[in-house]
Image (cartoon, rainbow, N blue to C red):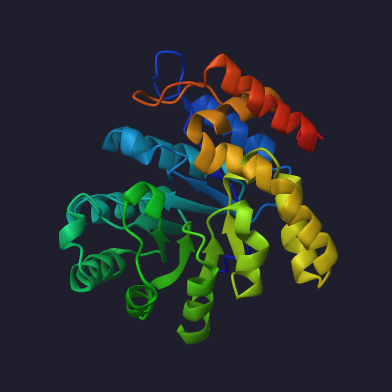
Length: 296
């Protein structure tokens, strides 16, 4: 099974000023971030605006990313669609492009019908069809669904489902899953804002938006915890919370992209209907980054 222990930035998809896909900019970000001791990269997660890309563009990103990501770093590809058929197609395309694993957000448009049995049939069909490991993605803020522990445990029994990314922040639920799931099942925190609490109940790492702009700090937090230096891990955890909140639940994708522009990576615009930050919000964001000394 794939080993997910470590830190993964969920890369934003790069667009030019006309909102056309800009793969060279995304490639440049990968190359610059590869200087850090990251475990790998996620492309086309929530920060990658998966829902804003056509299928052709998604496949283009998969292929570009695999070329840009050096062999000793993992590539995880977001492939979650609203139908099982679409998800299988994207999963096969990601595998063909060379992804090491796929991250599958649960279907959510018909959320009232997404009962445990429907989710089981969906995830099991995708996992059966996939030649690479599948990681479940629980993202209630975007999907409007928070898969409960019993459902996630049921899904974890499939031999090709290697783990889960949980962005809900329910550490007690993560602990309950870790206690009852098969030993090889891996849990990834979905936010730097609760990485240390998640690791304290068994998470092995995280897919963290903040790792795009503060990779060294996120890696140091992970390493301090694993080394048993809880004072340092806690200090790093508390320090990063304001930055993480700014580029996740407070202002989201446009804030992350603005922060990347500020530190010398390429952020660029998001695709509409996501709007850029207004001047006052951007000034507030940059002050948070400066207070954290994000550039260093």
